[in-house]
Length: 321
Image (cartoon, rainbow, N blue to C red; front, top):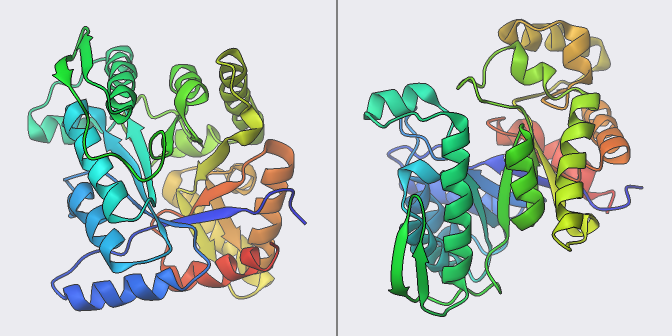
């Protein structure tokens, strides 16, 4: 039995022209054992705007948490991010998890004509933005004059359902982002360092090997302790870049080899990396329990896996509670 129930998230189903069918699928997932549906913030691959999508998901469900995974700070002023997040929290009845990120997808910045500053500058802006957003959730007039943002006497509205604010999700693969998570987040996302601007190569899988993940989690825990926070009260979430559930143990090796070819990584590396999850339901549950036991990862996002593929896995994890 795990010491804490393993929480599960999945990317929200893609929205097509048949909105009624999309809403029906959301209601079906709402009755599953999933903990949350997540929405990312990208505009090059056909996804809908995350604020609109999270609002629609919140209005179509009653139980699932709605997770911004994550809003890109460079695409939105913190005042706008706060206003949207507070509104979604109210509309959802207090089910928003507010993920905030510094931005990483270089091709998207280029396509939109946005300056792609060095990682340090993007993280600096995010750190300032987090402070502004938290201050706005306090409900008092905010006066802030910083390097990137200026706010003069603005009181944040509406008041959120969750107090003092919706849980913050901050994550990454580098020390600065994970230190920030330890200082501010309720959910720490532990995954690959994407400083090179891509999420589809061997580096992202290798950077989630157990020794590297342990070091990343240590950064979060140390920062939380320095900030006077209890690191055991945080959730530690890992992103599964690819999840593949097979019917028989005889299929596992072939499925893993296929997945690893896509990332140009050795299958033995892929087998050990928290960035991949491949096997039967029983094998996948065993891997997740091992990652929880050895690393403390108690939250997994299955990414863009098909709902029908991971639902037996979600059910098996729910049965452990």
